[in-house]
Image 1 (cartoon, one colour):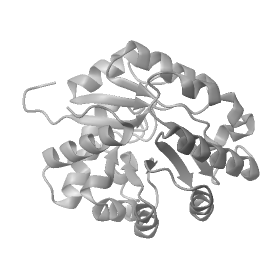
Image 2 (image 1 turned 60 degrees about the horizontal axis):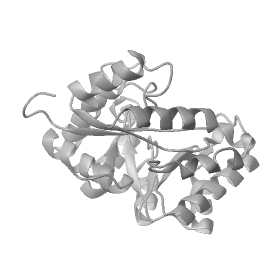
Image 3 (image 1 turned 90 degrees about the vertical axis):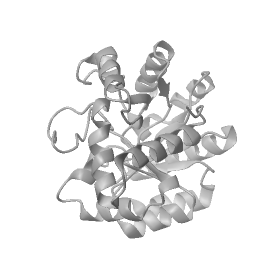
Length: 258
């Protein structure tokens, strides 16, 4: 990290994933050099949650979540519950609904999502939500179970209407490389209206690389591209976006503010 370089938090990545460019250690080192000093690596089932925990134990700048992705909802939430007792786990998720792929039956997705909301509430942990083409059911289940005090819509893909609904229940909105895509004007509009104290940035690496790297395997070191794009959208200095999103992420995940 260079003197005067903006400091970033990648609020959602999968740096434990075998597909991460340069390998886990290399990706973390490259991220640090780019000013990304904190990474949240996110579990999607038992195996990946355990991998996330292992990486976080080896790297002080990495923190792990434990969750059951809607794709894996058929496995049952009981497969991950014990992992939430691991010291240092910072959130439940990613959890939610994905009606685009329907890799798990929708009934199983809804049950797993509701149960993980309950776990987040019971343990007073943040909830990381994956919502794709399922906004109505997502908000209905959150209303029924009670949205945790700290809730984030990761890789936000909605527009102003969905953003407003999320903000009304107290949630954060996290923007990935999708916000840089030419075909994402609704996401860009949401990024413009999101209050400065409710916005996060993420890579979701190794997926969804931002412009100018779209189509390549993504990496946490590319967070500055996302932050710069949002800064330009909002006509705000990039240093301001870096500072606010980093402070928001640390507050959200209960990490010390640097």
